[in-house]
Length: 184
Image (cartoon, rainbow, N blue to C red; front, side, top):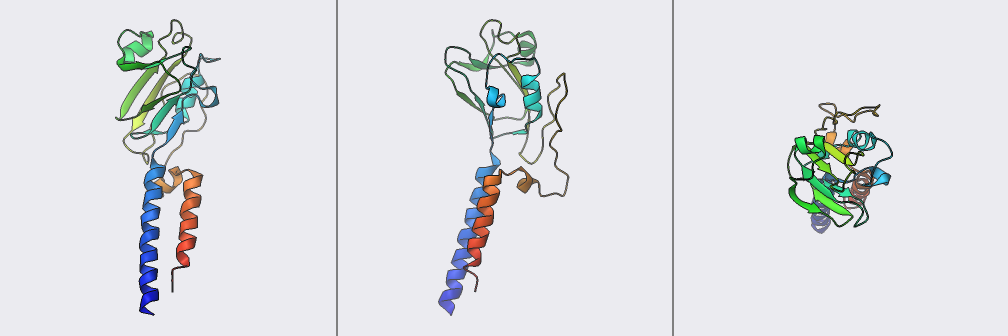
């Protein structure tokens, strides 16, 4: 009888550990810039502002700029360079190999452009607002055109669970069901 209780306790500890790992892994999000369009000269000026408005960005997330090497690049720039489409003063290195993955390491406003002549002026630029954590939604960047509903989290709600990908939720549910087998 004591052996069964010990096995049950060990099982519950393992399940709790697995649950915490799932939650930690599920917290970071990979965002493919522009969705299925990728990083390209957009068909309209609202593609990237509309896409950014539909996302919630947090420190630890990544931006994936999906483009063919030699056709575009990506660089982070200051707000003034974003507005004037100037590639003269990139923040850090210009990334010329696609697809390019950029880690979000700080909160606040971040601005990205394509440095190829004429691409930024044609709308290939991105402005995002990064929140301090994934449970705090970021306000959408200002854009023209109509935007879809902005995701929000009500205080007191289960914010972490509402932001988890459905695959993580399914894994957590499965782990909880398996843990029932260890209960006496």
